[in-house]
Length: 502
Ligand code: MLC
Ligand code: AMP
Image (cartoon, rainbow, N blue to C red; front, side):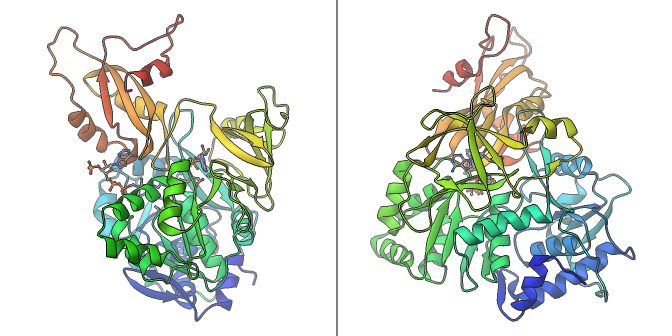
């Protein structure tokens, strides 16, 4: 019987610690056993799930990984749901993915019951799944088959499911394991959510591929993270720039002896590498982190559709403000508006090609077609090649916002806000912010001109929006205007909208 590479590798490390979480400490052997039980439960008498979508709402920890591996071993497509999302966002993913099964952690059963699943969807708890008797055979899952669907916001409407195959995931992981020299004696702390590739691929899957330890926190919190760093067990740390900013803030407000212990905890060895990505790392933050920790953060660039593409070197000079060179197995080019490669020193859109690139947007053949040009994936990010290294300059669309490392579509937020009874029209923009990279801000034309309606306050809008949108999509500032700024043909000019907030 041929096994998935991740599973085959786990057998070799069976007695080693794989996961440390609030539920306890678990070996690779435990993970193999629990995921085999989950697979048996999901199969429910079938020989192979044959790419049935299995959505799962399970917080970071042993259950999460056992369920993810169980879905893969049963031949299903893993669709992670975000524990921070309100019911309408969960419903959207379950419907769009046409999930056949939903696995929910017992603690989230209440949250899930508030989301309406289609009547034919089978719901099981992760505990129930992990208590099922294992089968003597699990299906062979070929590497070209679909493995995962991560929902990502784009320039058009609702989030799209980014489908990756087992081969794509293996290529993304081996590229990083090679470049950053992951080893079985590595120990990483997960502080990121598990509905995006940064947490799923770069942290958890790379660690488990390498036979290393992955310690999982339910949620980022600066003090516990500093305590774990100070214990001098971790060898790797990966986070978004906002998290480094929060760690710097906590360090700066700590008393001197704590600062000393926290800084000493960053010493190498054991801490050999600290990585930043998912959003631009301000050079000032890189410098401050160097003063506090002694580490020059390794900045890299990636995207849900392609995994990681560019990285500063593990060994050698890391240039502040740059994202380095293509990772192993990844081809990168910069092109102009007509799709022609540009000369070094000239800004161009980043195109990416290679085995790491996703298969398709789920059930959106047109969007998939439009995302590629001559076999290259068009990222929509603009960069320049300067003395052999890439520097990200921005994005080609103003409607994509990056806040706290999360990508948010301005159009998606506008669509939801337009359903608010007091809003006639609105425009959502990302406004530069030192802590969050960008903040989601909204300008509205209120309904009820003439003062009959009570004025819409930010607090009221936020509490209304929190029931409908993920927390990071909720606007942080509101301006009411009689008319949104528009150009001669009546199109809202987002650059002028952004000026309302500065
Ligand atoms: C939260 N707050 C925000 C905010 N998010 N304010 C402005 N903008 C935002 N985006 C506010 C809350 O309202 C609250 O305010 C306070 O901050 C704390 O809220 P929280 O929910 O507790 O925030 P926290 O958990 O600290 O979240 C911050 C974070 C989180 C940085 C840990 O945003 C995060 O996990 N980001 C990582 C996302 C990620 O993994 N992205 C990778 C995508 S993959 P108050 O007033 O109520 O206290 C990808 C590809 C690649 O990009 O290259 O990796
Ligand atoms: P996502 O779609 O959530 O996977 O986010 C991917 C996007 O994050 C990319 O298209 C970039 O815009 C942005 N991004 C990732 N890493 C970096 C980085 N190091 N610098 C600037 N932007 C980044």
